[in-house]
Image (tube, rainbow, N blue to C red; front, side):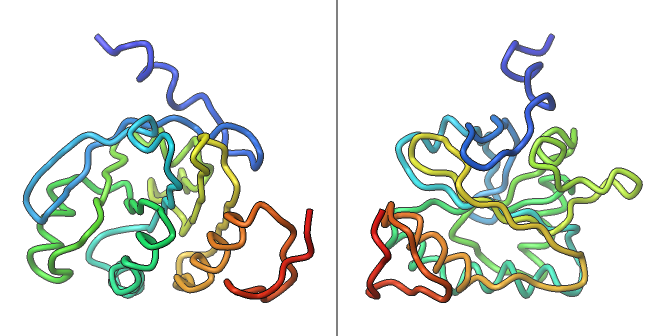
Length: 185
């Protein structure tokens, strides 16, 4: 029987300025280990969540590798990073072993589609997630959401720029980068 927390999942929606939808998903870590991730695991830290459509595709590995190449920058900003799709942890494991190589962050498997529904990235007719990027603050509040089409990879440097801007707690002008003046509160 499912616990109350799991039953509540699939009922929330992602809204900026509101608590991020809770989740509980399996994930692959360190190439061949499995674990369960939940939003509660990241209390008190910034969290960047990214969804991608499918393993073993053309655009997705470019994004996953790009997040890997910038991983230390997320760490330096005090943020954890997780990525995933509606594929299984076994598919993720095979993809890591055959193509991606070791990743410093977990890949989650949203097999029951609840997380994809809650974060409003699910293309129900295909059972796959759109490309979606989310930033959750240390208090569990959703601060950023970006959705876009399957055929275009996202900009990891833009995600880092927005994360740094959100962490200032101030108004930041267009194209603001870390170290530049903000507009104040």
